[in-house]
Image: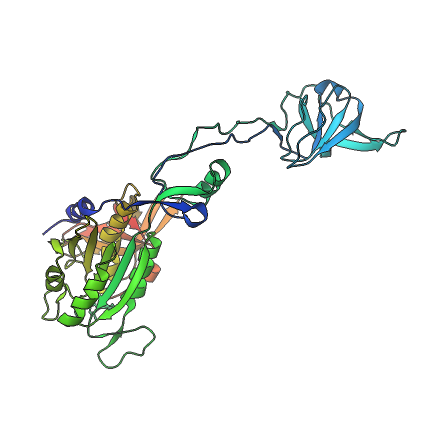
Length: 406
Ligand code: AMP
Ligand code: MG
């Protein structure tokens, strides 16, 4: 059976970055840049004051100086700082010519002279101040043409702000991935209904849609398809218009597990069925190649909720990252030390819902009590999955294990 690593590689081989589109910056959060953005502006764009105070020459520090002008942020100075005068200046205002330093207002005292003119007395010795004190020079942090954000970067608040400051309001990004989510199963009812005998709520849809959303995609919930060919056929056809179709349920060996054969009948090329992993072994993956050379990646996830959740994180999330131009697409694996001994029994590598914590001494992880792939409630206490390799083993406290954050 295929290993997790081989299966992830097989998925990523089929996943190609989506088209590039122009977007308003206000509509680009969490998308990946498809261009390297360079500054078309110096930062700061002019010499400016870092404080509210008085622009003066150093040699005049011991004098009482007439205040000959005031310059606020957003204004242009109309007076230069000549010997023997001060210009009052606000934080962020452009520096008058001739300024050597700005003395913060807290280090001054204002007076009214005999001629009723405002004057300022500096109450500290500035004779040893360096020219440029409390001033930031034009281009000190960024020059026109400097790289602001590299291609492939996911736009977080700080990137959005930096681009807004230095480049303007439009960016080239990879468009968000549209991910159709289709739950299958005769036993499922919508979550707002009370299940009848033998029925359960369709909890996978909301969970998988939320996982899509967290991964940066746009979920398109398609409701429930019964385990019946005609209904599966029409719902699958609807889902195949998305960039990715994620199904849950109906991929195992039961008589009513019709999803693989219906996908094949819909023209989806099978890439693999079954991976050596617990939970999630029956996962199915294939590709619909369209005439216009676009494609739909199709994941048939096992219906048990933890299987669906784990398989999404292991296989679907990397695919979404690749489609959206985010690299590396593979899950980020951290090493953490077990806080307690842990026993595994199993014929497959197991991803166990676990709780990780970062301590000053490093990351530690505690597997949460979990009764298996139907036990979704256990994952509420978890924030990661810890990998335990194949076989019956006892892992001592302190053993390092691989962990993938959720
Ligand atoms: P299946 O993969 O269809 O054999 O389903 C395996 C188990 O997962 C069964 O116990 C199903 O009732 C359950 N299951 C399937 N689909 C869902 C769903 N959408 N939400 C919650 N549980 C589900
Ligand atoms: Mg089923």
